[in-house]
Length: 89
Image (cartoon, rainbow, N blue to C red; front, side, top):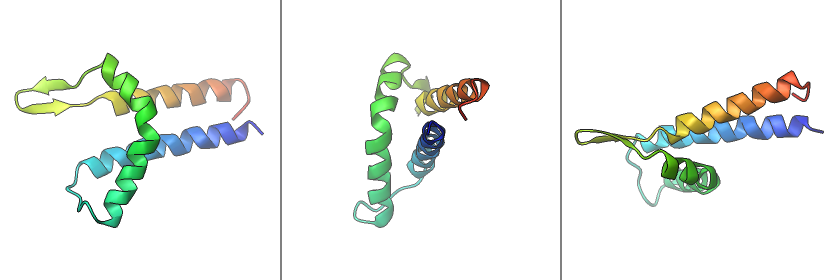
């Protein structure tokens, strides 16, 4: 039954990755991709916002890089590795 937790963690990491990919492209606000992006933002924001508050975007001139997705994905992978070590996944 705990394998569902491992599956949900993997799906959440994919949702964050999808959010990052969609953020690179301009989206039509009334299109299907904007709806998908809105869903991904709704699902991932509860975890991403606290990390973003602790680690603000790095500024390089006029460019700002948000490292919160990287931190959250590394956290998910670390948690999955711990669960595998315990024999849960």
